[in-house]
Image 1 (tube, one colour):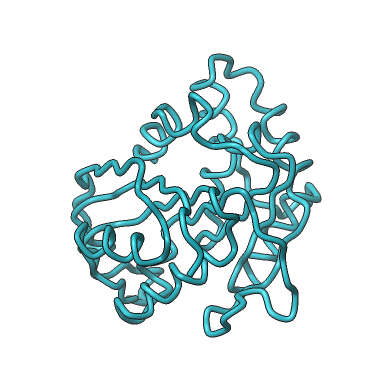
Image 2 (cartoon, helix red, strand yellow; image 1 turned 90 degrees about the vertical axis):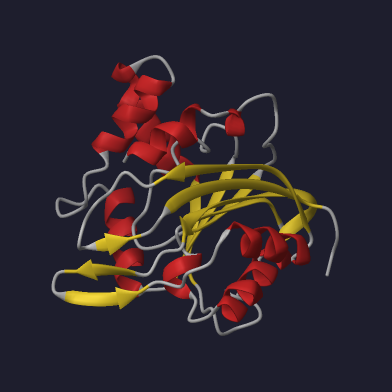
Length: 227
């Protein structure tokens, strides 16, 4: 969880750099750490998932089902970094209240949420989706353009990912990750209509046979042109 502290305590959430009413979250699996620091900024959050199991698990958490995953460690860390660890329950309730919709998305569609058409959002955040979801760098480039179409002109995109990643394991199953570097990311973000305002790169501290990547990165960019 070490990148999370850098992400939350950085300048990404200060000085009004990110603002607006509506946030779209398009992140891998059940990643939830990226939503806690942003729920204070936006009044409405729309979560997109590409698999039914993630949708089911998230709804269980929202409904406080007995079988729901426990996100207490994330809410406690968020409240601690904000200055008061005791307010972690308040963090959870705030996030639950602001998640308005959970929708299935399909990366093969030009409109990821077809047949639902969403109004353009003020901000879109995507945590660790580009590496596992795209089968090639061309697919990665196309997905960034689709993300751009979901954001208002002048809106913000927040991206988290890994440079030069190759694989990860779930149980005994090995999965491929698409590998790309900083040069490719910068070019693709620019061609999707964004201007990069900040890019932080964190060298991997993980030495494991279960996953491989060289660096984690966090990017903030502003949409300055329609495609």
